[in-house]
Length: 429
Ligand code: GLC
Image (cartoon, rainbow, N blue to C red; front, side, top):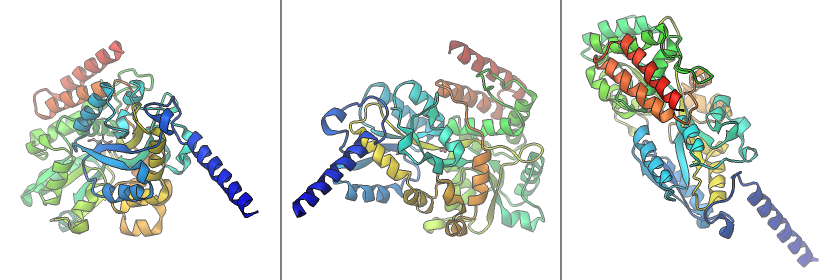
């Protein structure tokens, strides 16, 4: 009897394991060693190397529980473009150095269209617990190619201590921001406003936000180029004028996320456009050295006549088409996007989670007071165009907007040139 029960249990275990195997996530054909070892075994996770300190302990937890399916973290450079370049050169050459890729939401279409990442079985992941716009960034031509991991939306950080002393409220329009940056910042010996203005993906984001905030678009839903508009001239004009009139420091033309965060954290800026991750450092969390701890606030991005628009950022976890162990990879992704781990992504990584329920968890909101505002910003944020040629489009935006900001071309001419370059890319298909 005992034997029969034990055998029954064995059968049950076998069925569960088999079911787990069959539905474990990768929808496409099996690659690499999948046929031989059931797609299970050690793997690597490649990610941009910025603020990944929390990931080590998190992956250690997985490794302890899965000694035969250990994951090794591969840290790439912190800038979006350099990380993309390293990933794409490896994927293009058919190399198997990266099994799981933590890709920017902007790259899903390009990676999927190129066949570098495998389609996933959407039933395997808790997609309806995620914020809806983030799920869309992980799909291409109606198929799921990645699982949302971290979301992002641009926000305006401001020096509350200074504005309070001046009897001013945080800016609710570009006119207010411009006036305060121009007149108040110099009185305190600091710079007015900065974002991420080095030519790289960050500048594309800042420029796109300026265009969207002014009511413009870059591409229409049908892929037509729509950027040649008065709204785009207003948006790019705002950024170019800031440098011309000195309330955006020239130095900001070399800033990525980290340089701009540091400038604000060192007390050198009145206003900063950045992602939510900058909040932790500026508030001196985990012993960070901050001159502005307790002295700053965060509000939604302003636009020319009122509320502005932010671009939807974040990253998705994808499985390389050359992954050695796609079944283990899919399970690790399910783990990293599970509720308890997403909670740690916020509490230990200071990164915005993709699980909707965490945004009104009273305990989390008490420790991260910006969460409700962040959810509103993420839900209202505009995605970047879904295009297999997104990288080329982004390079065009960066080059042109940088020229306008560096005063090499006036905004009207820059916008016309951008429209022509994007149209040429669209024509080449
Ligand atoms: C952040 C965003 C990402 C964006 C990048 C630009 O990492 O999450 O979506 O493309 O910044 O630098």
